[in-house]
Length: 128
View (cartoon, rainbow, N blue to C red):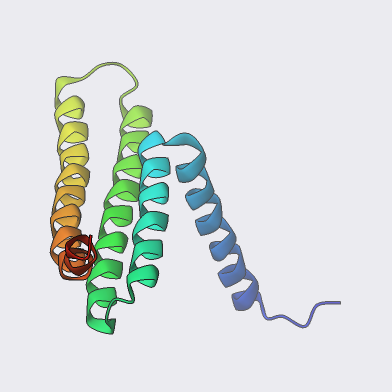
């Protein structure tokens, strides 16, 4: 017999649903798979280079921002496909805007990444 309160079971269930959503995102979205590889590379580089806590805050914020944009884009596209399975110019434009948000997020994250890593990498290049 479980002593867990119904509210706790509901919250645990919501975590399971969230994890299922993230699993779906990673299994089905090639861009999310690219984000996962790049996330691992950025985290590995940050660890290897010993970046500061402030730099970690910015990197993790941008990593989260890109993942958030990708997840929202995927959710939005799937919802659009259910609401309007046939081609619709307005739905296409809405999907394009959502995809553009992911692209914008990734470009800004890349620029910020270069700005953060440059001072750590430059001395390594100059030693050669």
